[in-house]
Amino acid sequence: MPIRVYNTLTKRKEVFEPFDRDLVRMYTCGPTVYNHFHIGNARAFVVFDMVRRYLRYRGYRVRYVQNFTDVDDKLIRRAAEEKTTVLALANRYIEAYFEDADALGIERADVHPRVTEHIPAILEMIGTLIKKGYAYTVGSDVYFDTSTDPAYGKLSGQDLDALVAGARVEVDERKRHPLDFALWKGAKEGEIAWDSPWGKGRPGWHIECSAMSRVYLGDTIDIHAGGQDLIFPHHENEIAQSECATGRPFVRYWLHNGYIQLDDVKMSKSLGNIVTVRELRNRFRPRAIRLYLLSAHYRNPLNFSVEQLEQAERGLERIEACLRDLDDFLGAAGAPRSGVPEEGGKSAVEAAGGAGAWEGPGEVVAVHDKWVTAMDDDFNTADALGALFEGVRLANQAVRERDPLLAAAWRDWIGHHAQWMGLVADRAEGEMTDPEIEELIARRAAARRQKDWETADRIRAQLLEMGIIVEDTPHGVRWRRKGAQR
Ligand SMILES: [Zn+2]
Image 1 (cartoon, rainbow, N blue to C red):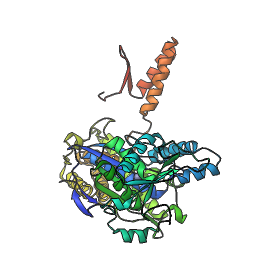
Image 2: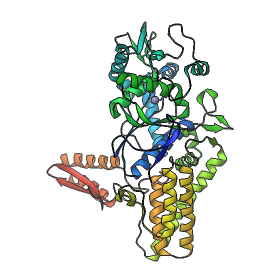
Image 3: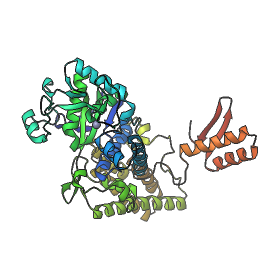
Image 4: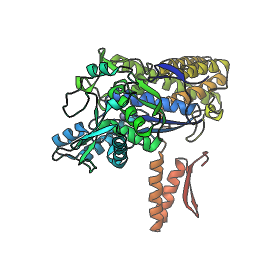
C-alpha cells in the first residue's frame, strides 16, 4: 500500500512519491524565537516530526529542515523592551525551544537554519527577483509585485480580489498593489540591519523560508509543512518568490495542520489565550502532551482542555504499565526479552525494506496492519493510536493468560511502535546520550595527556559499566555501545 497524503495545493489526497525514489526533502516552518512556543506551534512540530518518522519507518531517507526566524518586528520590539540584543534574545529562546522540543520527543532536524546566518542567500534571491522584473524598490524597501505572477493565489485557492478583501492588508501608499509584500525592509534608526544593494535593512519574513529551503533542499522540495494559518499569506508568498526566482516548481506536497481550539476558538497569540508548552510541562509529562497532540488527525481541529491532557496522561501510563507487565512476566517466564531495538539498530520493518510488513502471531499482525493502514492514510495518528491501544489491551490479556510467546510478540510490537510514535524515550532510562559519552571520553583523553592513568582508567571502567566500550586505535579513540555495530 502506498502512502497517501492530502495536498493543500491540489485539495485532494494523492499517492506520495518523492522526486528522488528514496530521498524525501522536507521543510517545516519553524518558530519565531521571541518567546516560548505555545501548544498550537507544538502541534505543527509534533505532527510533522511524526510524518518524518513515519516516512523513515517506511524506508525513505528524509532530509529535514526546520528554520528559526531569529529577526523580525516582534524580536526587535521585545529586545528593546528587555534592553537586550536581538541576537541574545534569539539565542535564549532557541535554547528554550530545544529543551521543550526534546522533551516532547521532537527529533532535531538535519538543519535548523537561522535567518541571520543566511543573509547572502536571501540577498541573492531578492536580487534575482528584481532582475527578472518580479520585484520593485521603494527607497530602501523591496516589494514583490504580485501582479507579475499569474499563478499567485493558487495555494490558498482564492481569486485575488477575494484575497484583497479577506486579507485586511494595511494600506501602504508605497505598494503598487495591496497584496504586494516586503522582501526587504529598510532599517529604522537603531534597528539591527545588514547592508544590501538597496540600503541597510533586514529580510521580510516570507523570503527567509524560500531562500533557506533552497540552500539546503534545492529548487524543488517534496514536502513543505506548517500550520493552516500559514497558507495565506506566508506559503502563498513563498511559492511566488521561489517559482518566479527559479522558474521551477517549488513544492510537490503542501501539508497543513489544523488549529488547536480553546473553547472552540482558534488559539493564537493575538487572542491572548496562549498556553505555552513550558507552562504545560509544569503539570503534564511531555510525552503525554505529545500523545494528546497526536490524538486527532493532524488536519482536524483539536480542542484544548485539561481533561484531554489528563486522558493522554492516563493513556501513556497504560502503555508504560503494559510494557512493564510484559517485561515482568517475560522475565519470570524465562523467555528472551525482545525489547526495543538498540540505538542504531534497525526495526523489523526497516530490515524488511520499509514495506510496512510485520511478522508474528496473527493477532499482532492484524493490529499492525491497522496501524500501518491508518498511518498510510494521510498519517492518521488518531486511528494509529487506536491500534496501539488495541495492542495494549491484547498484550495485557496475553499476560493474564500466561502466554509467553504471544506476550513476547506484543512486547516487540508495542515497544517498537510506541517508540516510533515518540511516546517512549528512544533510549532506556539512565542510558547515556552520545554527547555525555563524548564528554567523558574527552576527560579521559585529557587525563591521559597529563599521565593521570588512574583517572583515565576510572573513566574507562565507568563507561564500560554503562555498556560503552572504548578502544584506543592508531587513528584515535573509538567507542561503541556493547552489542552495537559501529
Ligand atoms: Zn516559512
